[in-house]
Image 1: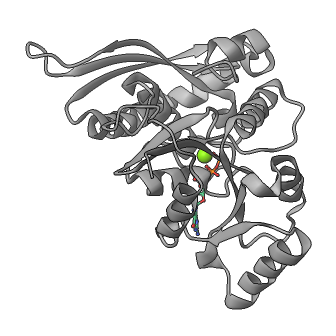
Image 2: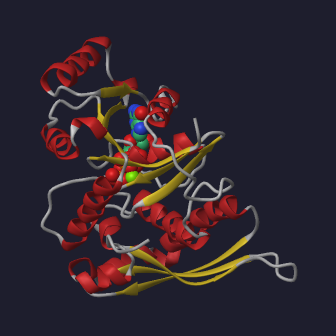
Length: 298
Ligand SMILES: Nc1nc2c(ncn2[C@@H]2O[C@H](COP(=O)(O)OP(=O)(O)OP(=O)(O)O)[C@@H](O)[C@H]2O)c(=O)[nH]1
Ligand SMILES: [Mg+2]
């Protein structure tokens, strides 16, 4: 049999562990992960290269009902990815009992293309496990399901094997020595946003975006990667909160993001971080597009 290659969508409600799974599959910290829902806002491309198969994983924003333009843009990304994928991993939290949203997604995907992925199996006992398995098999008539813990990296290989078995024959889409198609500057912006999610509360993480204004790679003459970035907020009051008293908050965000970016690039980084107000940007479709959060973006 020849080489195989295909696209696999990872979809599901916010916070079920989609990005944790992508990172576990790749063995890289590509997608940002935080305890807060709606962390992921893009289609994140992760490439798994094995000797006879290439699987292109698409991690997506958590699917949820909302009237907010930014959230609708995120749902559109999910719709597009579902449409394009060869296989769809519909992920859910094995400890939750209300699976109505998942059921709706399952029906849209169709049973043939869908692998149900019950994550956070470390949180459930045998009884709950059997109950869900029974429900998927008998009520949903599901084709395939995998229980796993992305956090503990348990059951991940079983899922990879189930996926590779379903990949169509074909040539690789990407070179075999990269694990993502995103440029470093994109991941750097995400790592800054991760700190906003980890360190800021209430509506602030959901009102912020990160824009990289300058990105200079390290060279022989200047071995430091130099980055200038702006944190975009919606209101003046949010700007003050992100900066913090005497600039303490923005310094802490900058320090932690810089360390994460240093790990990514494998060298020293200088990060110049500013805060800018763009009034009500999350409600403005043009601003949402300009800041890169739309299904049109790469
Ligand atoms: N107990 C447990 N926690 C997990 C597991 N997988 C992920 N988590 C946690 O769940 C939270 C959300 O994880 P993410 O990977 O960001 O979830 P997501 O589905 O990508 O979330 P969005 O991007 O917001 O849609 C984090 O705190 C993870 O550490 C798991 O297998 N077990
Ligand atoms: Mg995510």
